[in-house]
Length: 359
Image 1 (tube, helix red, strand yellow):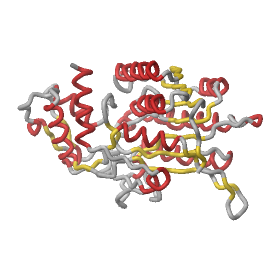
Image 2 (spheres, one colour):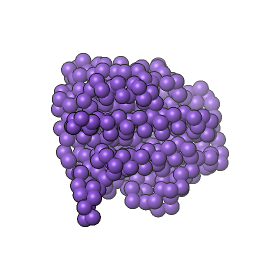
Image 3 (cartoon, rainbow, N blue to C red):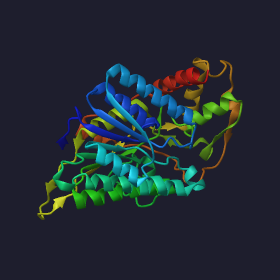
């Protein structure tokens, strides 16, 4: 593994106003304020833009406190001209591509958005990384990009390991994320771009994505509306707290796969994959009970609110999977790190934030 220092280096974070992106930016600022961060995000309206603006405000406050260098650029990774312009202007050492069209269910409604951002946008990023070496320049030392636990589909091997075959995605979203892994591997092989893909498992926390179950359930319960519980509640999810995720990404950024030659004398692709998950799947009904406890304890819902009265058990929706469960052996082996925030602790922090943000 090639150790990379982020001090005084230029780092590009795409999806910087997103849930994971914003929290990663603030972690880097706190850990190494000499790092020069450029954030790119198109601030699309897939969900409430005010939450993205709130995250950017938090980044601004963190930058002011830490003295970190921060520049935000509004734009899309699908805009090749803009991506090339940024790479021409800044000598990026590390690129973290978190910009993506997320959501399994939305991919059934608007597939075009997934091709535009997750395929064309990602291609623009890897092409820019490739040409960062032109003219003998040092270029990008490490490309880190977001994949997803969705690539495992209905894999019957539990927990999910990065060595498991993932050739049968059950949603377009999953297919685009697997495509990103294949594209990254090809570019690592052809152009020796050190790249690492990270398969995230159900990330949650304060100022998260409103389309995620915990957030959507909260919105509906607060309005006294029914919440749909898919697969009749017989789902398990590996809920991973956002701070655990960003710490994992921060560690991975600083450890790029080595460039080396194989026994056949040909270059071995400097390519790696890791799961980042809590490795502790929770039954959906248990999750709802804990969420309800924390919402009542923190004043989001009345103390006598009967959540059971608002539960509606429905069949599995197309594109969903019954269980997600991360095997983090590779992450522990290479980086000595394993996420571990208990679900109740993370949901308490979400409930406190929700109460403060929405009043």
